[in-house]
Amino acid sequence: MTQEVANFFVSEARKNMHKAQNLTQEDAMLVYNWAPKFTGMHDASGHAEETDFEQAYFFDSAPKEREAYARR
Image (cartoon, rainbow, N blue to C red; front, side, top):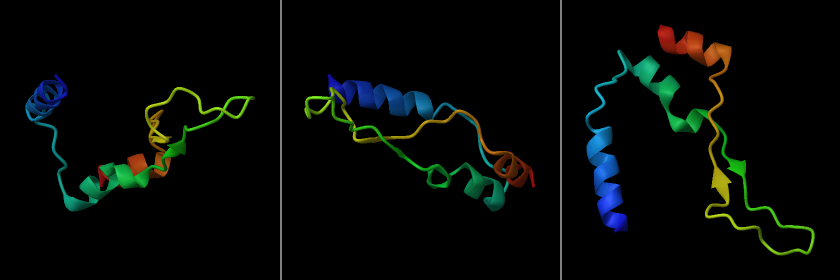
């Protein structure tokens, strides 16, 4: 089941024709431009909360300078 979901996700992602216009724009879109947040917190008793990942990326919006840089 997991492999089927992964295969579906990849096949759907490949349908997206979004593409950077140049290397500068591509660099501005990389996930490495954002910092992951630690999400593996413990509750008051010291037990780990129910989380699947210890780190996660949250994309509220791109900082203004990154948006301007991506438009070049």
